[in-house]
Image 1 (cartoon, rainbow, N blue to C red):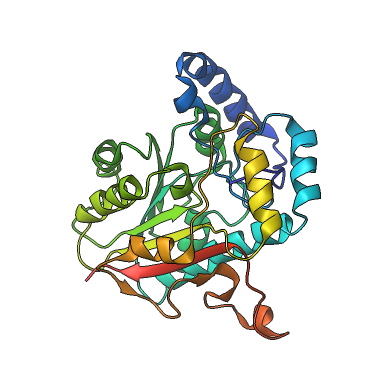
Image 2: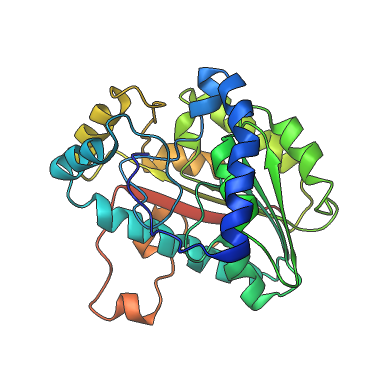
Length: 294
């Protein structure tokens, strides 16, 4: 997906020191990464993830982001809708579904209402593992994403290596108990449909009955401007992101029990009372769903 500036953190005291130390410690590792490793973490699509914090490195910096917003002004609204979907989905999982373990792949830079924060408000003992392979993202995450009661851990791994992710996650999560698998804005970085489905299938195979899959990704059926913004982004030197149709996104849930209302534009997935106040939310090119493994 296409990136933009997230809400900045105000760092003081110990957190600022931890972050500076972590960034210094990872800089040498970053230089040693392959280009694919360094840039795989560009959790971007036509939804700049303005507030979501799940952002990557866009060549051109603010100027590049400005160009994308000029092409597709609604990108800011899509980013906010994506973040609100994450909040509603995690609330459902930690609340009604009683899930207390989460595997969030494609962490992105920290922002407000991260997965562990939303989950641990409802289930204080919840355990959350974040996965990313950008050392700067991991440095920020380790410095800023901390829990007071539950457990929060971090895995340095690539989405294309699900076995490594599972092995590392098993050090924190009990893979015999239900887990909420979160794949938000990340599957578009796997261009081949069969490969993307294979990765999701492998991850789910390792999780027990009662686990849930949550997917939210960019689509290409509503906004021509969004498709054009994605083309510009993909040609900018960033890691390409593949827009899919809603039907293609629905295929990730094959064999699972979809939670109502199924795979829909993310603003329409269980909007809260405030979001419904002015009628049904407008559809956006970002479709999402949550499903249970039987």
